[in-house]
Length: 311
Image (cartoon, rainbow, N blue to C red; front, side, top):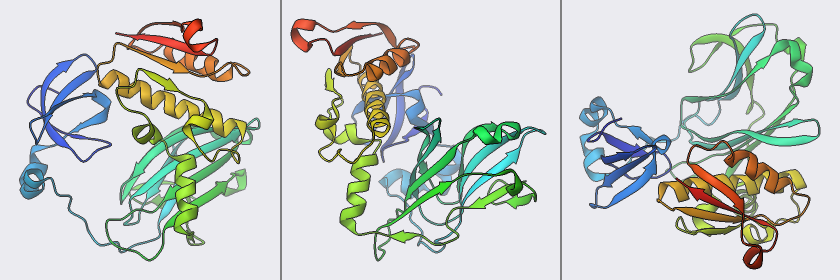
């Protein structure tokens, strides 16, 4: 990635040209002449071949949308890496775009192991697992929202709970998209559920990993992570779900602070049982963009806040 390269932002519609590179931060000049700082991992290169094939798209910033045709074709696939190890992939062989989150329950705790957006006819590697430890894999929970630029009748979501057993790994099949042999499990074989717009909206509010875009300014130097501040309707969430949500907001807001050139940021996490504070300190202790961190001023924030000095 060099100055002058054309790039597209992963989580926005903007595209532009790199005008400066400062460590992990690149400055991108977008169409309107504005320059915005973003992290390297938040941009992808636009190939010259793509520019040739879609000149109007690059010029007018219009997205070409094809009509949704195939509604089914969502899979989990295990590809053997050797006799003991599998690579787990999530596959979208439909014509929908699928914002998704995959969670895993182990030892009575649920953690999010992958999240993002699966574009039509695309795949995402989730993790690597050992078949000899199958009994310790736990339970997988898959959540997806069906998205399209074309009109459709009702909001659609997919929610699947999956536990794997040894007798399910007998017959290798051709895996769509990847073109390799593996063990295939179709998640939407029984169809997809329809929910009301209100129910879907509540689900998005409770699960959104980009909530801090709307609720918290990218230039805020103080972020309150108390769940009642972040979510109005949180009573139905378990303690593990609340912790996972707070950590998602923390990570996203820290990334935004770094991308926007802030020199410091303070997270109010409260005292409680100390779990949220411990997880935040664990994550920032190895963060390459954190110069140092400490308990924030007690007279200003009490005993439940962490001050982070950024490089």
